[in-house]
Image (tube, rainbow over all chains, first blue to last red; front, side):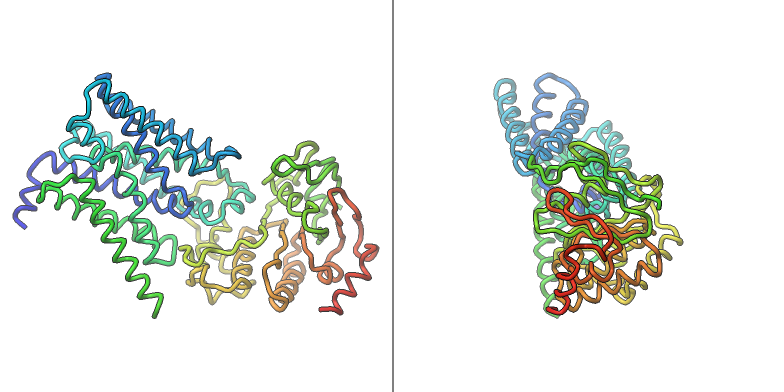
Length: 272
Length: 231
């Protein structure tokens, strides 16, 4: 226990804690929508675009966020546009963008600094990665993501539950899908330095999947996903500090256990 | 009579294949117009165009200004574990398309409760939608449609996945709703006995209009009434 209190004395841990909690919350909220719309792999696709962005920023000596936010945001819009094409579809669109971005990132890295510890940190996350500047930007953007989600909560439900009906009653469904894609892009960028570009999508998928097994209302799923996401992040961060593990992998490990437990509880309830 | 929806020389295609060509008709306020025709004759396509889900290749679909439209697509049965309660679904019917109010008002909740009572689903409010029977789910979706206080109700084969008993129950409900609320109805259906008894006018479709007129003059009316005896 004393080790846990000691952990909070380090400024880098304080930053990781604040950013991680905000990003976990944002990702969990968006995850509910993305999982129910069967569009959750977009987080993974955007994570790989994030890797390409970080590689590019590092090679050109540019600020990471300044490169990543526009590139990942533009990719989110492009994926959405591509997935609406008749002959492509959502899964292929994500596959195309993510693999193209990953290979671009690998080429840039190989031609410049080579695969070093920085690249490993990009891919699997590090709690040391966050600067005070990242903290400020992350806090502002997370508040925007969470605020917009809450403001649009009821409308998002109607689009998620029955997109055709929402459109027929005059709701601009494409606009809502665009907003969701952009908010996801921002969340991925905020979380990828700490969680790693390969693992950031787990913050979107796992808590929502666990919550789905435990609740029967949309509101309940949103609350449960937020609570599970925060809980798993806090335990994962503590383990990462205590056992010197990459943060992303440590948090995903907790999320995996939570999903297992939620599945067992859900199954037991179903039998009752 | 005042028009609720007007189709002027409308041609529609679906995935590049022409489905309906050069269709002209109006739905008048307060009437029940039933669309009949074989599968693939263009009924669903026409209904989708009437609510703006499909844009015509040519021609124009015009809704009366300020008309509130509710639409029920052909069988939207929920996944069993979809996390949505009956209350959440009915309440979502009260959302105004262009307003960004983040919370439901007391009035919205009242409207949702009234719609649920009208459809006799008020006892199911806390239940998960996927755990209900097909007939109950259709009632909930109809309650959602009514919660917004529509002037026009567009129903695409509302009974296609239901057993004859529930179908009969829903048909009586449509009649009751019209009598009580005076809603204009545009319904596509294969249930000719319902058409024979409840429609004011019939539109028979086979890529173009085969018949459009009062139900009593519909050439297939004797056949439709005969079908009732088969049931």
